[in-house]
Image 1 (cartoon, rainbow, N blue to C red):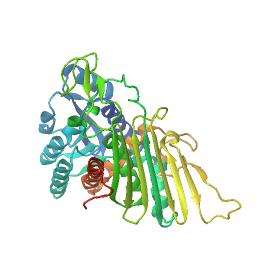
Image 2: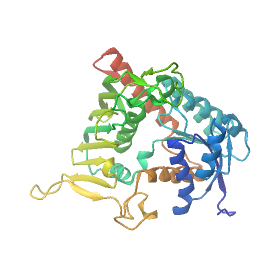
Image 3: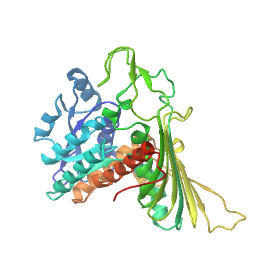
Image 4: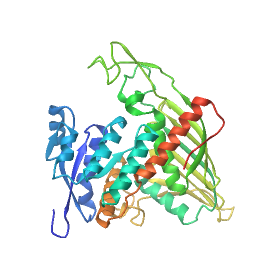
Length: 393
């Protein structure tokens, strides 16, 4: 698939579980549907368990495997490092990869703390001076309906933004008998629903509106404070002993916010909304129109044009599958919807294109740092039971 005019981009991926599989699919698929200026080459997959990472490399299409991520950075046949490991590893891995001259794609949230995110953003800024780029993986930006929403706002179709409502609702740990996982340990995940899924709606609302959240007032809650340890191991990460493990993160986050343009915002992130599997709900109201989106109907965007006569005005259901819509022209005929995995493919397309152009891919590590500052402000507000917490710029 390579040619002198289309050189390769040799990729090393760290992590082979849920996100690793999604990223692997994207790296394999992108050059087969999009005319990329660089052709991704799935060079090496890294993971700690030799047998499992070898098996995963074969299943997911990687040419080789490593059990030590440091070894991956030492390899001359790796141009870009894709980090899909838990949040407590992001800073060390990303900073080391950038120092080694490797481009970096790092899953969200960027880090577990603002201090880590600041160090990562500084490392990315230093690396950029040598043409080495870094990007954080907020893939929902690449859902065509979301990208269309951002385009409508940028084109002024909503006028002055006044209200933003955002929810991310799941139910995968609503059962108190659901076992412990690393996502329920603060030392591994940083936070719970707030960082895992709340980070997405923080990023999405800022992306759609083109504005920044300036302050928050928040409440966090942990509904189930102890969970059974996985039967297979008897312990998990930093949680030892038999029987039950302590949940040290939030199960749900609710907070108010304000945007730089003055809009009022409400946010809710929970993994206890029974019946909601992956409901990302965004509504934006402006002086000239409104839009609404729900990921559980991800190929549809609802748009209200305030200029329409009252007698016929109403929300318009736009099926976002036309070739004129963002990303869609490379896929199927109109009316044939896309799925969850396509956002990761579009992320690869945008990243590879930016690298070939020598431009900064977005969202950058600086963007990821800004999201981290919002998450940290939410935690501070909830801990202090304060009425308002400003977010530093």
